Structures are given as C-alpha cells and as structure tokens.
Amino acid sequence: MSGQAYKTDGFVSYDLARWVAGLKYEDLSPGAIEKAKLFWYDSVGCALGGSQTEDAGILLGHHRAMHGDAGGDCTCLVSGYKTNPVDAAFLNSHMIRAMDYNDIYWKADPAHPSDLLGGPLAVCEMKGLSGRDLILATVVAY
Image (cartoon, rainbow, N blue to C red):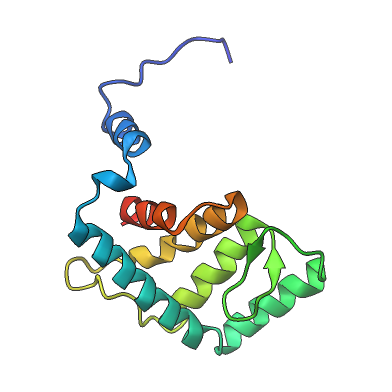
C-alpha cells in the first residue's frame, strides 16, 4: 500500500459505523429491548431443536475430531462444548438455523437475521460482557 489516506466520511457505511460505535444500551427503547429478548428466546428454542439434527451432530463431531477437547473461551449451546469464538459462533448459528424455523422476525422481512446471533454471543462470552451488551449487539445485528 502506498500509505495514501482514503476518504471515508460521506459514505453510508461510515455513517452506519459511527452510529453503531456510539450506540449505548440506554439509547434503546423498551420496545427494542423486549424485541431483542424475544429474538433470543426464539433463537435458543431453535438451537435446542437444531442441536438434535444430523448435520449439527456431524459438524460438532468433525470439530471435536479436529480440535479435541482443547477448550476455549466460548460455549456451544446445548452441548456445553468449549471452543474458540469463531467456531462457537459458527456452530451456534448453525444450530439456530438448522431446522429453518427461525425467525419470528420473518413477517417484517423474509431474511433470517438470527443467523447473525452466534457472533455477538461468542464475543460477549469471550470478553465477559453483560446481558445488556448482548441485547445491544442483537439490536445492532437486526
């Protein structure tokens, strides 16, 4: 790289990043907090069912075969298996989506934003953050 500085302001991504970086839990409306909690209830329920699918078992088995019980900072839902944040995010997101029952948000948008929740969960656990931080990250993800 030439060391040239790039202009970033004026782009939508810059404005969005600045908004996200400045957002605090206290900025959230009670309705947004309640919706985020509902998204988590739905996602945990989906993960419970998804953990019983054949493909979730294959993924976890493959991961264990590759990494053993080396441990890590983050927990895989249902199994309690500890691993690194990237793999925990992937395994948890897969369980949330495995049965394609998620998400209660679909009436507003046919997307499945709960696919994103494995990442914030892993980061919050790895960093020892609070449930409020997880709710904030959930609102940002959605």
